[in-house]
Image (tube, rainbow, N blue to C red; front, side, top):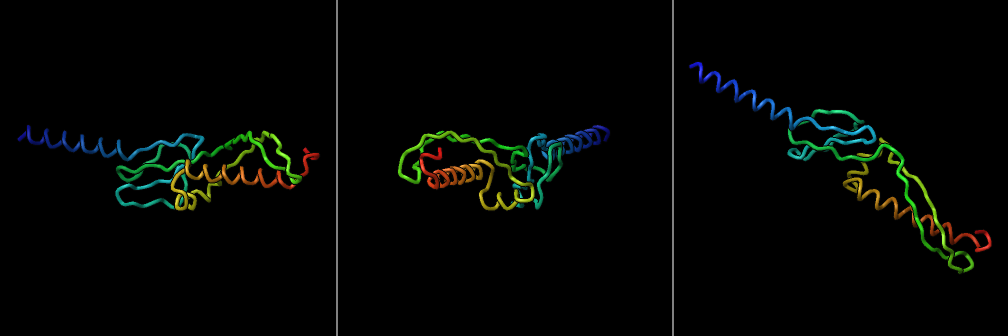
Length: 137
């Protein structure tokens, strides 16, 4: 009888430790994360800041940087008078915390979102370049 109780107690302890281990995830201090429950296929409605967080067993965080991201573009563009101009531009962008959930629904994760943002940034740079004559550079 003692052996059965000991085995049962040990089994409960192992299950409890395993459930606790798969229910804890960490977000670094330079990230924001939105909880996604893989089993229920549910996305939380708000981002969480850095630290150790609990959730349902098997969940994960969809993470975005909480700091400014710097992009650098070294290309050529066509000026208003039709002359090619070499340029080098650096710009920064940041995902506002309140827009993260909408961005996840639309773009799925940070790498896909950042690809779109950098393409839009490059397009804006090309458009701005075409608004000026070569003498303005």
